Amino acid sequence: MLKVRGIDRGLLEMINQAARDSLPNEFVAMLRAEEGVIEELLLLPGTLQGEDSATLMMHMMPIDYSVVGTVHSHPGYSNRPSREDLELFRRYGYIHIITCLPYDEGSWRAYDGRGRRMQLPVVEL
Image (cartoon, rainbow, N blue to C red; front, top):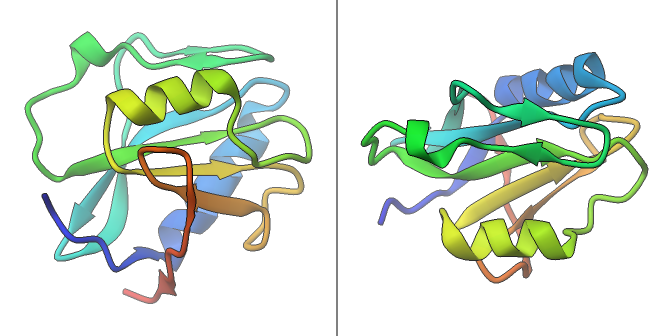
């Protein structure tokens, strides 16, 4: 398992922009890390985005050992994981990010595979 020590600031800005662009729907993608830093999104074909949920087509996921987890947006002001989010967290990856309105540097949180909040420093690449 790849040890993750941070997320790239530019990628975090991209995530929040994708969340704003997806409104009123949720945005969802996979997270890729290189040398311990999450620095890329992986968009899966067939992903479904709606106002109440977003669904990843996991059978479309390539074999990719750099994928460390997921990211998605909530169209409201809460970045706390739902019951459905916790199910996803348990099944795939070990770092999960949820961002919410207003989709800025302070509106996201990282969680582990059990849904516990975790620290994930923002780094400059």
